[in-house]
Length: 68
Image (cartoon, rainbow, N blue to C red; front, side, top):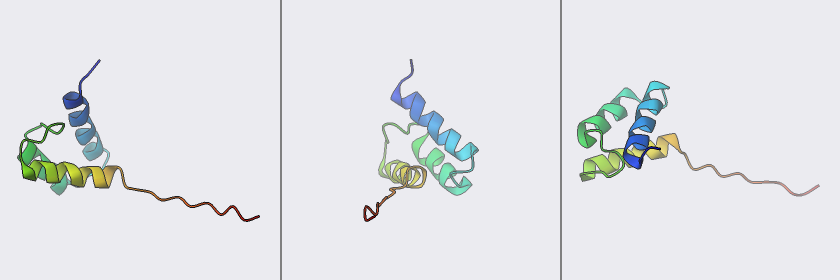
């Protein structure tokens, strides 16, 4: 069993390692969050976490054509 802090940090590192996050965004988050991604300690950290969420979990809209 893990906690949010451990899981979130692991996800950020995983996304970066898989090439889903740029080095620039990863380093910005590392610098501003100090590894605390689940409870951002400042505004810059919160902004970097939001940017990571936007990149990692993009909003996808799927529409279906039900006309046959």
